Amino acid sequence: MLLLVLGMSVCAYGQTTSQAQTQAPAQSEPVPAPAFGQTAPVLNPENPPVTGLDEPSLDLRPSARSFISPALQVSESADSNGENTLGNTSGVSSISRVLGALDLQQYWPKSDFLLEYVGGGAFYADPYDVRQLQAAGLEAVTRWRTGQIALRDAFSYLPDGSFQIGTFGGAPGLGLATTIGLGGGATGGGLPGINNSSSGVFDAAGLIPRLQNTAILDVVQAVTPRSAITAAGGFSDAHFFDSANCELGPTSCLLNSDQLTIEGGYSHLINRHDQIGIVYAFQLLQFPQDTGGQIYVHVINARYSHSITGRLSLILSVGPQYTELESNGYYGHWSPSARVTLRYRIGHAAMIATYEKFTSAGSGYFAGANVQAARLGYTRPLGRTWDLYSDIGYTYNSKLQDAQLGVTAGSFNDGFASAILRKHLGRSYEFFGAYRFSELAFDQTVNLGIGGRGKIAERNVGTIGIEWHPKPTRIE
Image 1 (cartoon, rainbow, N blue to C red):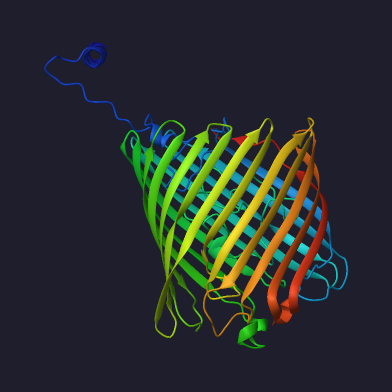
Image 2 (image 1 turned 45 degrees about the vertical axis):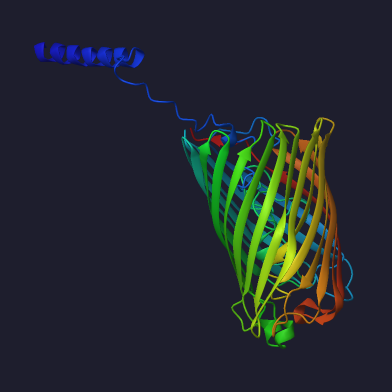
């Protein structure tokens, strides 16, 4: 008992002394200056550095709870071009899709971990066929007093097109694995083109499975309360499983590609709403097959952003780009690079408009392409239980160099328009109806084997379905 009382007395004396020193430090000992990390305006998550990969969010109250959330979606589509082929179509066909999703969100005081998997199948009625649909997304963020480091990855294995909100009625889950871009804010910041799917694959003809993956590691470090430096490195690849096409000849075989990106930037906060920055990036585009050479891209962008929390986000990015081709010797040329993103909330409705000009890997058709892409999206609630989503987009892709593989065309256009109407049935179910029109058009007739022969692949898809998403399970 005596030893126990003595030990408790010593502990109490040590705690009292420690508290006294904390509350009233000696005059001879200087008080350390407080770190500006999480209180630095330039590190505000609602208005992150303009040269980073995150964009300002219009969501004023993002979820900060840790949970596991499942979801299941079943839908039926009437498709005017179910096999997604060029040229003449065989009439309306029926396609059933079953998709499941599992989301994990884990938050700690200085770290976030988000993981999503979406998987299922598409069942084609005529001719009967089953195709896999797989996607996964990961985002892991660790913060310290003056910065953060984040690892982001998006993977997909799809038979045609891509997971987008307007594709076939939207995908279940929270969207980490199935949205176009990476980044914790919205569609993802960074260089022009980084918002698009891996290696710049926009659309394709035929039911040709393609595997795509993009991994990015980025760092933000504040140097003053108003200034920060950013750095990022990323690798993406696209692989097409079209061996049947390649047996027909080189101009029917789609091009696999790899893309390496390294960038660094400097951001300065002018005031609470405005930022300026400058970023330099190097990109290397490689094609495993014998195509004619690698592509080296050097980009310098000056950036400006204006953000009003919860209402408006405008980002302007423009600068020169130097492209060097390794085809029968070296050939270099200058061109502009640009990106404009506007997101605006009007009452309960929200709008996004983007325009980008950049160099991509060519979407499997070309060994590199100059791309101009524009998109306009709009969403709003209709009453208490109805939601409307609409999306329209267009891209123009011109061939950058001649290659032994890929299509013989010189350019192609890819456009789409879609609308989704969702009805909330209680807290766990949603009914939805969707319509999507898409068109892939080449400037001349091409032969893609199982993708058909012609200039245009046009598709009209009407979809109805139901989605189940039970209450998330808290894991805190």
